[in-house]
Structures are given as structure tokens and as C-alpha cells.
Amino acid sequence: MLKLQNIKKDYITGDTAVHALKGVSIEFRKSEFVSILGHSGCGKTTLLNIIGGLDRYTDGDLFINGKSTKTYKDRDWDNYRNHSVGFIFQSYNLIPHQTVLSNVELALTLSGVSKQERRKRAEDALKKVGLGDQLGKKPNQMSGGQMQRVAIARALVND
Image (cartoon, rainbow, N blue to C red):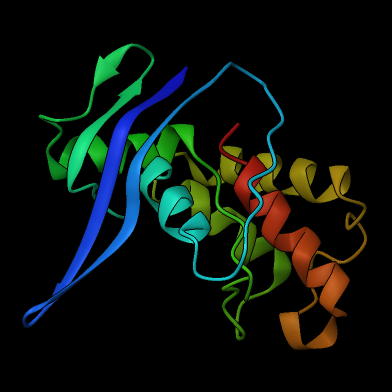
């Protein structure tokens, strides 16, 4: 499903180049569970951002379902992020003035799913993470663990 081939990522500031990734090659099989471990600053987040289409690699190639991403346009990356990747950020990135249900529905709004289908899928995702009875709450009314589960539901809702 995903194959990284000699991926390099450099950050250039002025005369200084920081080599965040230096030739990473790895393959991920469909539905494989993987942990990425390493010390602070070793490139874990950079690697995940490249895999998730949030950042671009400097050199090498990323293959998605056997197709090279070297020629991907913004529209291709948008489609990949909207339909193939779910993000759970460390800070959850929930919208404080929206309900839990609305926060999860938002992921589907960007994918063009109808309002009725958005509601059903968001409710189902929240039930799966044990928050089916919390739909009307706002993030500031929830514990850290509950907010994390909202973020997980939002990541899963696009299937």
C-alpha cells in the first residue's frame, strides 16, 4: 500500500541545511500496525507528515498503492488526505465552539458527503469510541482522554 524509497527531507534556512531524513526506505502492508520509535529530533514527525501528505520530500519517492507521487499535484494530495489518511494530532485540533458531533462531521464536510450521511457516520464513529452519549458536548466540557477519542473518531470517520 505505501512504499518509501530513499526518502530524504532537507530544511534550508539561509546557509544552513538540516537533513531531517537521510534516505529512509520502508514498506507498509495494508492494515499493518506499525510503531515508529526514536529519540527526540530524529525525524519521526517529519516521516509521518510526508506519509500523510502534509509535507513534501526533498528526494526519493513515495508510492501509494504502487503509484509514484513524484508527479502529484495539490489536488492529488488533497484527494489522498481526504480519502485515505486519518490524522490524530497530539493537540487534538478540535474546534472549541463546535460540539463533539460537529467536530467529527467536519472531516466529512471536506469530502463532500451529504448532511444526513455525515451525521450518521459521525454518530457511528463516536459510538465506536464510547462517546455516543456525549454528542452535544463541547471540547472544553470533556477530559483529555475523551478529546483524544473525539480526534480518533474524526480520523476514522472517512473510513
